[in-house]
Structures are given as C-alpha cells and as structure tokens.
Image (cartoon, rainbow, N blue to C red; front, side, top):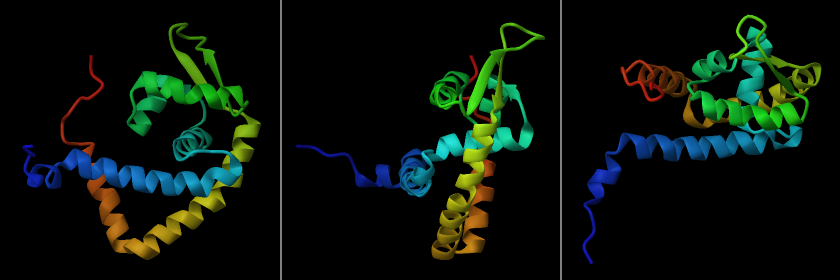
Length: 150
C-alpha cells in the first residue's frame, strides 16, 4: 500500500483551519447548549441584535457565508420564533431577516455562556495570541478569493 507523504497534510492551510474550527466550534456549541443554540445560530442572532433587520444576502456577507447556507441556517431559528424572514417591501426578490423579542431574549441568555467560553479560551490560549489569531483570520478574508461568486 502506498501512502501520500504526511507533509502535505501537515502543510495544508485548509485542513489546519478546519480542524481548529471543528474543535473550537464544538467547544462553543457545548457552552451554548443550555440555551438551545449552536455557535453559528448565536452569531447570526448576535449580528441581528446589533445591526437590526437586514437581507439574507447582507447577513451572509457579514458572517462570510454563502446565501444558500445562510437561508438554511435561518430556517430552524424561524421555526423557533427567534427570527422572522419576510419578503422585502422594496424588492420582493429579497428576503429581510429580523430578530424577534424571543430571539433577543435567547441571545441575552447566551451572552454569559459565550463570555465564559471566550474567557476560558483566552486564558488557555493567551489573550495576546487570541487577538493575533483573530487578526490573522480577518486577514484571510482579504486574500482576494471569491468563494461565493457566480
């Protein structure tokens, strides 16, 4: 049996990022479970609580997600009454997402859980290293790729 050189896996940016994202994502999911949210759902609700209503496309861009995936992520939130998704009055093709009072309440309940896991990560990883990690990951978004362009 022939195996590929291990160095390819060790130098793959995508694999390293996905492994870390799954690890950290599962950690945040576990922390937010008591309020019935996953980390992605919390991020969506948090953005809506700060920015108000917005189109699915704008919300997807803000979170660096394709529109179809965002629409799929909004369905369980809408079923639970945490957001509404309605046609735009200005453009019937666009859909407007709005956080509901229940969504705001759930977000507020989740914030202390998020803060606790955030603080634990920064304590274990190092606050300066965590800040540098966030800055590096933001820089990745400026590398010129257009993963969702048609």
